[in-house]
Amino acid sequence: MFVLNPIPPQVDRKILDVVVQAEPATIGHFLHMGFMDPDIRGVMPDRRIAGTAVTVRVPGVDGTIIHYALGQVRAGDVLVMERCGDNRHASVGGAVAYAAMRAGLAGIVTEGRYTDLGELRQYGVPVWGRGPSPVTSKRVGLGGEFCVPISCGGTMVRPGDVILADENGVLVLPPDKAVAIAERAIGMQNAEKNTLARLDAGEKLPDITGASAMIREKMGH
Image (tube, one colour):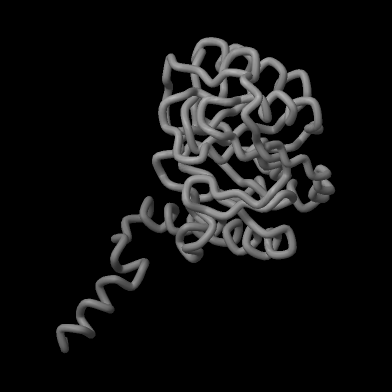
């Protein structure tokens, strides 16, 4: 059975321009929800993306719905795939990556496997997944779902959510809270530059962060 819903409105580019300046690992200092399983990793280093989630539920061996989705996506979208427990069949390969490149996708996130690593790097579309597999999905028409709420990497993803991803991991943010979260992280990143300067000047990290004072207080000194 196929479920085909309308594609969600794209997140405002001004929001994404702010969000992409934030590092998921910085947000991880104060936010605990919304992070995908850390086993879902980027194929290419030093790439960070922010885009609108377009979701698909891909049942096991059948990749038909992925091909459908690639006919619907827009430049700047992030295609996010639930794999229904399948950890064997690659849902992203050379042809999918090439189609994604031609569509202008910001990236692809699958909770499963990918293949054709050389082609993925050649076409330049950032891909996140659990690692490579030579066994691929097929177009057999069993079913699939387009633009439905899914679970990817243990995290709920709704069509239209903000996806922020880099080589440290993948984060899902609600559009109405994304800017506030990103701005807090950007402030922390700027503050860290001051910490590094103090370390260069000879101060010790636990004195700067307050760890030494905290331990002394706990020990009653």
